[in-house]
Amino acid sequence: MYAKRFIQLFLIFLLTIFISMFFVSYFGIRGYFAQSFVLSLVGYIILVIPLTILTILKQHKKFNVEKSTENNSEFRNILNKLDNIIVLSTISQNETISSSIITFKQSKTEDNTLYIMTDSKTNRVRNIRQNGIASLTTWFDEKTGMRISSNNIDSEIIEGNEMLTEIVAHPEIKDLSEDFNNNVVIKLTVHSALIESFQSSPTVTTFS
Image 1 (cartoon, rainbow, N blue to C red):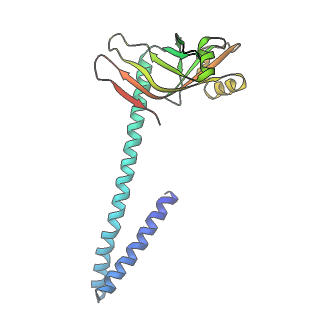
Image 2: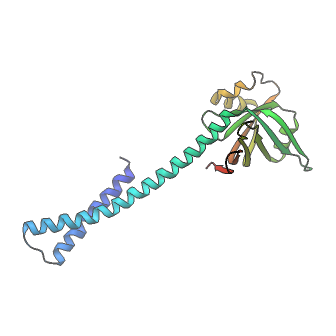
Image 3: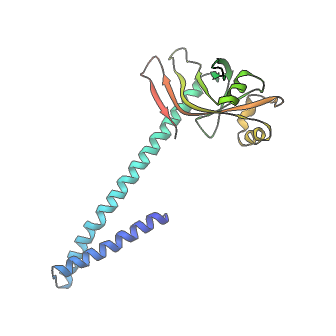
């Protein structure tokens, strides 16, 4: 049991005793059995109400967490069904848009994190260094039209020792390339994405 819940139950227990005793004293109830009955009845009512409220709040929080996890799992499941290819778009300081088709690898621990390994001299790297603005859209399933496009993502360049540290923490990056010379890792963190298909209405999945 967590300390917070223990303190909550203890305070509720004390409140129950004080209110029950006040009720017996205020109405002048006498007799062992009469006092026991009134104390039990009042105490039960006072104890059940806050516990019920705490249980409802806990279940509501659990439902929200499960719903978020379900959305995240849907995002991963869709990516697993698609080719690991995205169209990555970036923009330069003079507002020239650059788009390219490139392979990616999804993090095994964070559903909304995608990795790209690329040459450090590419336009996409230069643009992200300048302003960090990027967007992506996946390839699509030919039968269902299922595809994902970003609404809000963060992009960053990871290189040097930081890149080696990131690869140790996420060895799946090595599936992209074993050659780290002159290469950097682009880390894309998806905060919101649009999921579309031929079979259903578009939905938006978000990550906290």
